[in-house]
Image (cartoon, rainbow, N blue to C red; front, side):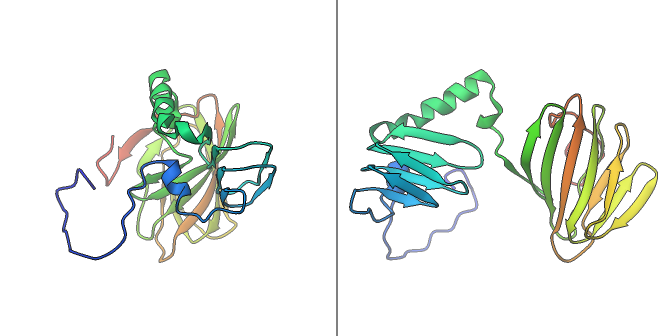
Length: 217
């Protein structure tokens, strides 16, 4: 917002809190009798003055105090409450080392929708891909990986080599290395597919785009 040139300001009478740290986030939650503030499925034993935030997993603490613990799909942060401002040092360290966590979240937003990395290991990666109605991915190809697409919900229009397919829920297709392919949502609801990648190299830069309505190369 600080960098936009398309901003309108309207006077209003309301409370304001510049949420600039995890301590500020913690202050939005009423403390329990031990001074703990929790969000999510959190269980504590002999814990005081601690803020815990969990999106999915169960978090347990025993015998700790004055900590900030934040568990997200991307990373786990554990710090003392008086050092939360030094989180930026962690970020700079990740950036300096070239770690992809400083750039890419587990859920990545694209003009056509989102993809979420569900699991990855040696020679495989599993994604959940969601395509907005009327949107399509680029016509593309991969040199080092093959892909299996399974439609979870919605309808898919797919280019797979020389074929053009229309798939519904529980239907699938296999895309070998070197095949030109494209995924499109011709319907009126979100298209959700599970993509299973396999190959020697699975990074996002293994992509050759032949046609892209968003101007990417």
